[in-house]
Length: 88
Image (tube, rainbow, N blue to C red; front, top):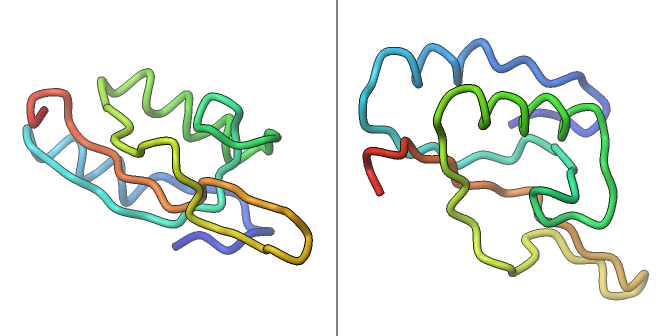
C-alpha cells in the first residue's frame, strides 16, 4: 500500500521483480495514469508506468474500476495486479 499523498517508492517491488522469474503482485499504490486506465495522471502513475515498461512486467487488470465514489460519479483503477511476462 502507498498512501495517496506519498511519493511512490518501488524499492520493495523492485527486489521482488529482480529476485523472482515468476511473480504476481497485487497492490494499491494510488498510482494514476491514463495508461493504467485512470481518468487523470499523477507522479506515482508516471513512476509505476516507467517501472512496468523497464522491468518487462504486465498489468493484468481488466477495464473495471477498483475505487468508486458513486455520489461524485468518480471512478479510478487504483488496485493493480502486476505480473512477470513469463507467468502469463
